[in-house]
Length: 301
Image 1: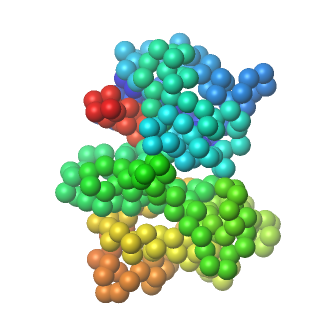
Image 2 (image 1 turned 120 degrees about the vertical axis):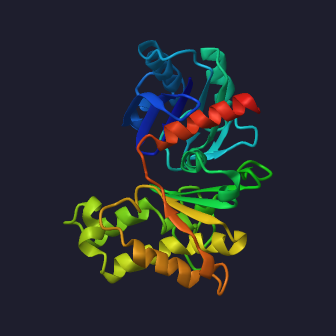
Image 3 (image 1 turned 180 degrees about the horizontal axis):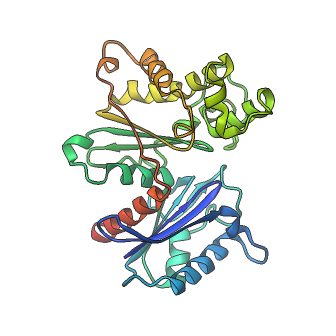
């Protein structure tokens, strides 16, 4: 078994995964469990894993993989920047080495969206995967790119930061510290600000169901598609996978969303051959993807 962990800005998920992607002992709770008083978040994570493993025995533990909503070093040992995770003690620390030494097991880390894409691609043959773009819109704007038979890393390991593409004339300050990042307007955080300002009497989970025809909501949905269309125009992908909490919300106007993508994409191609699919958004997807990644790394480090 491999232990898969998905640490999000809101939720913390954990489970034991076999090589076929079956998960056991799945558990989800608030990410605040790592912020308990007395220790920094990294030490709390080590203690949490130790307690979890003591309570969950499903065969020999071969490795651990942890997904962060963050930029991660090329060697997959350190987190560089994690603006959407309000926890201390993770940045610029050899997380993989620290946890591995404490628990005596190989540890691998990566961007959480890479694990989501690995889950969504599981079972597809290489020809069907081709160039796949994973767009996961939740608290932030997550992006993962599958190309040439693997995840695109880049020189420093931080490729695919689509949420931090600068936007002309945008003035909002992003959590990363830059001004005008796409994530300022294309994210769940932006939707929350919109709801609080213009629809304070509407539960955030119902905002599309009740207001999808409102021009402010339509502008928000159109805004989500600008970074998506940008990457489509650059990479001409075989398929685009859309996932995350925002597209999964009740009443999300998927037809309008797709029409906006096509409107912004270059004609005639790739616009005429766009293949858009939606993630099943299983709660345990990131955990399963992490487990599969651990097995991949153990077999081909």
